[in-house]
Amino acid sequence: MATIMCDRFRPQMATVRPHVMAMPERLPGRTGVVVNEEYGLREEDVLAKVIESISDKGGKDIDIAGAEIIVSGGRGLMGKENFAMLHELAAELGGVVGASRSAVDAGWMPHSRQVGQTGKTVRPKIYIACGISGAIQHLVGMQDSDVVIAINRDPEAPIFQVATYGIVGDVFEIVPALTKRVRTMKEQRGGRLPDRLAV
Ligand SMILES: Cc1cc2nc3c(=O)[nH]c(=O)nc-3n(C[C@H](O)[C@H](O)[C@H](O)COP(=O)(O)OP(=O)(O)OC[C@H]3O[C@@H](n4cnc5c(N)ncnc54)[C@H](O)[C@@H]3O)c2cc1C
Image (tube, rainbow, N blue to C red; front, side):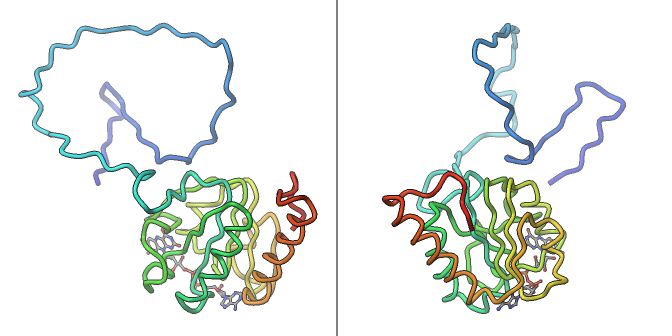
């Protein structure tokens, strides 16, 4: 990783992580001019070589950055086995399971599921934070989600400052209750989720 200052010279350069900015609306019929420049670089002049490209989207693990619904768990889950209830809720919602760094460091979830500064930046339609305090390093990775639902037994937890809906309570009661409610709603609608989730 490098910090490159190019304030006085050209060309200038900037990089952004995926999902940091909102996708603009598609404009059908929009056109542009493609300018093909002559570029006389030979391959042997390039010192860096691409040996292999590994896509985040491929393989057996899921790319949480592309998910529309994320159910994330933190240290409040108390153990690896308790992530099963998050997988259940995520499966009902058609989402995926994410995690805080504490949960990843504890070995409860793989690093590929970590949300935050040293994990993935996500921007799903719904982000459900379960037993996550809301440290700044976590918030920078999820605070631009369309809807944030936070479940925490501590009413002072910082996660509530970015939450659209806050539920003060025990994850071990709230999460199974949410899963049950979503299941009932789907049963009443022939297996489909309502357009607006009344959670
Ligand atoms: C350089 C650096 C980079 C970092 N990068 C990241 C990153 O990418 N992502 C990240 O997440 N963190 C990152 N961190 C760590 C971050 O500072 C926090 O330590 C971490 O996010 C805390 O994780 P947590 O919220 O799961 O745990 P905690 O802060 O311990 O919070 C647990 C929460 O669970 C609640 N809780 C406990 N039991 C229950 C229950 N039964 N029901 C409901 N709520 C309950 C508690 O009230 C508490 O709020 C980074 C830190 C540093 C220094």
